[in-house]
Amino acid sequence: MTDDQLKALTLENFERMFNNGDLAHVEQALAPDAVDHQEPAGTDFIAHLKEVISVLRTAFPDLRFEIHAILAEDNIVACRSTMTGTHEGPLRIGPMAGLPITGARIEVPHMHFFRYDEHGRCTDLWHVWNTLLLARQLGAPAPDLRVGISP
Image (cartoon, rainbow, N blue to C red; front, side, top):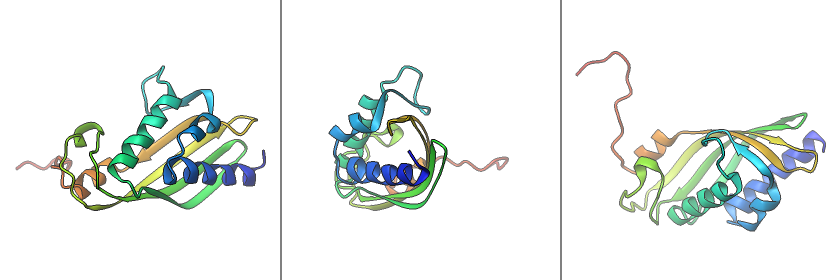
């Protein structure tokens, strides 16, 4: 696939999976042995991604990813995005699990790198998102991360 085709495919994947909640599309978008490099080795990426989408769309029914920049070279696509939504349901993510529903509007930056195979399926994901900012926007107690400062 061309770089432009891979960029268009990436935008379609975000729209269908995250913005529209199309969980069936996950199996089409990912190679069977795809790897999420933020998860422990052996994690079933397809099942994991379906769970992540479900968890996020339960907590934020109006979940949207807006892509601000997208680049492609060879079989890798990089993009910068913002995840937005309104906290209207329970959130089951790490230390934020169990937070009361706040009704807060969230805006959380993300960075993604996707590697695709010759069939246009994602084989690898490297992803960073500002979970500390998300926690703060939801009113969770945030740790003091300043270095070298004593109370």
